[in-house]
Image (cartoon, rainbow over all chains, first blue to last red):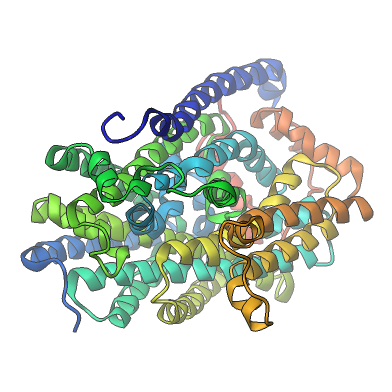
Length: 49
Length: 555
């Protein structure tokens, strides 16, 4: 028991939140790269537009 | 007269709440001077930045359900209530990643400001079937949503001031309706930002104070009842599995709830969407953990089974731990969250009637001025109906009221269609319509099994059995699944929309918006909503505003 919760309970309750935080960081980085790549690819059209 | 629980603090609480309302009305009046088109009224003319969008996306959804409902759930269930975020947080991230940008681009290109209009244009449905059914779904469940928020506001006003529940409901309803009519979305977005910040601070600080006062709660909870510290609330087998599914299934409602989607449609620059996503997600982490901790600390502070109306555990703990003035601010934030949700949902229901039914069917030549005026009248009418609903449903727990009668219905009816509209070219109008009807009716049916089965002479299956778990699982899970299956089967069996148009629309997703403008600068062939160039849903006005705000020069 750790502070009244078993280790399993801590893992079961906290695990998903840790995974979600990592997923958020991954999304932010990858989405930024994707957006940059799109803008570079369509640079000419954007200038024309 | 019921006794208030504020005691000596009630004067300060009332002063705080009154000041808040004055500020709110002031913002509404200020915004009403800026508002000149229905595009402004519904999506804020798309002049809303990423941080404001992120906060308001969360604040408008979280509502009385978060501030009163989740603490109430934790008070009854224990640590399993942390799983209220189990499905919601990833579903929200997936929506930002997979829906926000596509919806923002698509609705800009097809010039749609409401989901029913978007569905109609995307599915090339000239019969009005998709638009009519989706508008009806919106009207019913968003109206129910507004009612639930007004119940929450009435509950809070009652426990704080001692006023009777029906007076609390009337006062809460009057504030929400008046504010919405005065300001519309533009005011909503900015006040949501303020309210979001207050809620976040409240749910961050309250547990910290509680830790200082009581230490970590888990040992005391364990001594009180071992199930309170069990991640599955002491359940096992099918009951535990369906319990977890129920919490996870709450997240299925995100894509179908238009008050969240309309925020995606209103963001000013597509590039900013990922920043808005981070803001909204971090908000969720703090708010969900904080709200559950508030319920757990209420158990420690007041004991198990000592509070008759468990919807009041959050205000009770607030008054216990904070000095009166601070408690007043925190409770004003709770009230603000309810108002925030109710006015957003009232706007969505209004747009369903004015844009999708009146402007789409009854008077395609209506002027913007007429539509703005009608919007206000319709807001008043739906608001009044919601107040009546709130009065009838006043004894139902807020947690259940929101999930069963609003969130779940919207999620099951509209979620699968929205996702498919953005990702599956083969979706048809008939598939979408059937999916909406099946989703909405399954959701309504699933909450009533315990009443329906005994009424027809069939006993509920024994607790712990698979069948009992299935019949008592949160209805959004089966409703969403059935809605999705219906959508796929009917779409595959019916004629798809014209491929070249769909292909052209879908090509939008692969380009940044400035490049899309280049493609469509001379293209006037897109389907429009009202049939006249001046119609508000043409979004000419919005496009102009977007241009002047340098949206198209996004770098």
